[in-house]
Image (tube, rainbow, N blue to C red; front, side):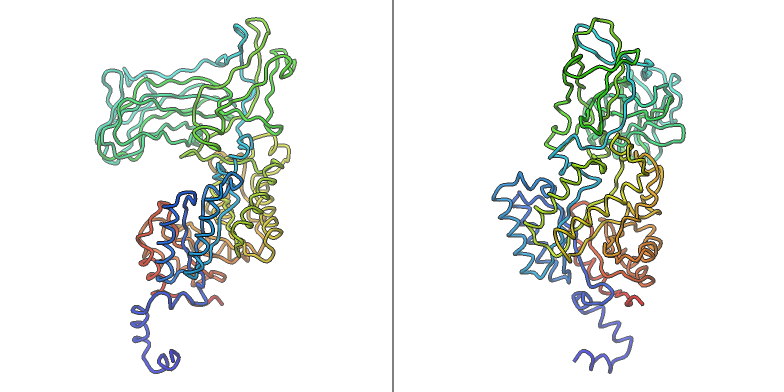
Length: 548
């Protein structure tokens, strides 16, 4: 019947009809047969399962046919109780009732806290080399080498640089209504390469629109600190902390302030810089703790000094969570006062809102990922699974990685290939998906990416042809789609990102010019589902031509 009608109306009438028909009609388009939604929920919370059921009902009516489902509990299924798995069954039933495929996410390589809850010491670490310690009253503590300090804010002239909108009063630096202009003050400091440092300062805000930050820049302008301060829009004087590794630098520039402030006021005071060590101390063979005398003589743990651990590492504020700062452990020893030691170790580092990366080179990492795949398939029995390799911002520093003598790109290629192999073993014939960014040279697969040691070039060599890539770089969408089409991988586009739903039309237009784009996903990072119907309509009104 549809064919009969189509043959007897004009092309203009067909176009008008397309704008009026439900987007579900176009969900069967051979060009975009997968119409998905990304959902991140905590299935341990009944109310969040209620929210999923509501989303599923709307999704089905709007023409969607799949849900990519993420839950941090997927990394710790062995800790979940009967109620959790009852909710899993409830979600599966609701999806089936609404004719939706569930594609669960696993393998958190990048945002790894869920899997690190099973072994916090598997975190990727940055190296501290030969930090100076001195023994006093049976305890060895850090001996600054060289001594470091920051100026106070009594005189702006004492600082290396400050923007014109910075003022000082009563020992505090302040900016009011910066209007989108930079508001920063900075000082150059001499440091020792490959040492751990701690910055603290007091921050006060009043209706401040913007993000107060501490930036630690090397001579090339590369930032060594990516942890957010977490200052509130309005707060009284509150202490905030940053911990960073100097890496191969002997001089750094430390900035306080904001780059995006608009209205309100921001003030900071009492800046302090100190060398520290063993904050978030990692203990595993691939990240060894080495203690020796000044003359190079190696000391033996539990013989020359007591076993050293950091009880808060990977356990606070929750299992698998890592604080930016806490008081580090010390070395207890019976050696005489004044004995000088040299300590080398590895420490985790947090990025943005507590992101920590797992070490991809540790054998136990692959054991945990394999175990997760088995548990996930037992729980979900899904047709396909989504590998969560994404924004891998710390890698290739610890002994586990360095002993392999590979580039970060080669390490990642090997890891994603191994993860796909695990899924084929656990779920033969099933579909395998992965985010695009770490395998796209125009996105994140390049050198100088955050705190990755080396070049991520070549990571894409680990993508087998049956792995379906999910591109999400909107600004470079044409290049991204051409890149993965050239590699021979099928693609499902990730669009939306909590912005104008009509932007998806630009993705669809780009998809018209390449082979292999078979789907599109409503992708929200902010748990916003108000635009589900508008997004679907925008896709339906601009159906892509089938790939040639």
